[in-house]
Image (cartoon, rainbow over all chains, first blue to last red; front, side, top):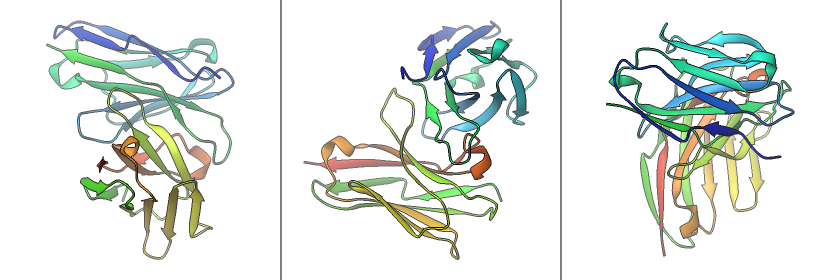
Length: 114
Length: 113
């Protein structure tokens, strides 16, 4: 069990640029989640996948955000035309689709939009 | 109805003391209540979780107390150590989708040596 892996750890970009983050979940986990955490706040749910299907998206996920999980393994989160308000820690997490299965988080990608 | 309210926002405890963090929820459909610990620059790590069919769960120095009628639950850290200094988050979800968590605002704990 190597844990949830996220890359890059840090990303600095200029406003208006596109960015893409990658998440590799724990290998046997079929559910994958994306969260956003701003300074001093708890993580907020963005979206989740079961295998390759995206099952739910939060209202927080604007049209500039898109997530994919091709083949039900790794996932990518893309933000188009970044804004300063997008600056946050983006956390990926995974679990099994089983009652009471614990959620395991990665160490996140810290995005700074200048 | 989706909120989870956490208090206090910050807490300072002497080494060896008991740290107590409280949470309250509104949605009675929630039936899975975990606590996460987060160190700076790291993702949240699961500490302990409880279902509403039990009133207390203990793992090592960490205990969750649950009051279903009051819709409240709390984390007790016994014999607090400087290494416990971190931010703690309570959360809630439905047991069928434990990944879709509603988090509290967090409590920053400092344990003084």
